[in-house]
Amino acid sequence: MTTPFDEDPVRHRPGLFARLRSSFFTGIVVIAPVGLTIWLLWTVVGWVDSVVLPLVPHTISPEQYIGINLRGIGLIFFLLFTIVIGWIAKGIIGRSLIGFAENLVNRMPVVRTIYSGIKQISETVFAQSERSFEKACLIQYPRRGIWAIGFISTTAKGEVSAHANTGSALMSVFLPTTPNPTSGFLLFVPQDDVIELDMSVEDAAKLVISAGLVYPNPRDPSTPEQTDAAS
Image 1 (cartoon, one colour):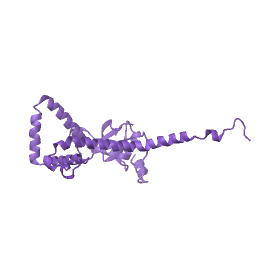
Image 2 (image 1 turned 45 degrees about the horizontal axis):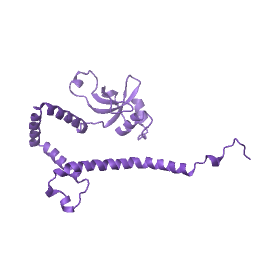
Image 3 (image 1 turned 135 degrees about the horizontal axis):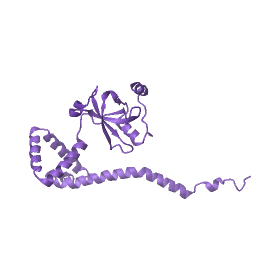
Image 4 (image 1 turned 120 degrees about the horizontal axis):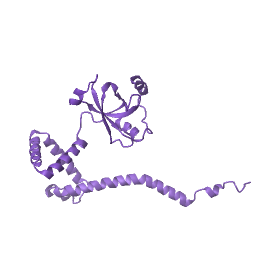
């Protein structure tokens, strides 16, 4: 026996249209990232081909021999050309030519500004240093007793290391901000005050971005004990 106040299970059951709509949006969530990624890669490769292939001599163009224009051939030519240029630039002749060309560029007011800006960005993005965020660490910041995650960059050198009166070597530590880890602070911390973590840089970055909601799986059960002992 039912009363007027009892819920009717048939009335609240989602209909066919509601189930189809739910399945449609679920499919969109699954397909959209994959489809957009493939489309973006396909577009970038096509753009590289459109720029590089017109510069390739007709005698060595694969289209002359296979009869079709395969997408990605221009990208392969670009990678090979970049590798050859990099190999030449490492030699004595290459360094001399680069130095001569840079001297010419430095005499051109507008070109000099554009070239120096692009060069600085390229070196910042692509240059490989001794230790490019290879370790995540814990430091006490902004005061003792409060801990923050940082990324060890290098050992401090030059005037910074010479003028700092510390009992141990100084470590260059990048302290990221949440939720944007690309901004932060550069701190020079005594090595004795830096606790290296077992988690990878990627896991530490996820922890920072998620504001502490996403913790990596523990690799070593003794890690917390080591941290407590070090503190």
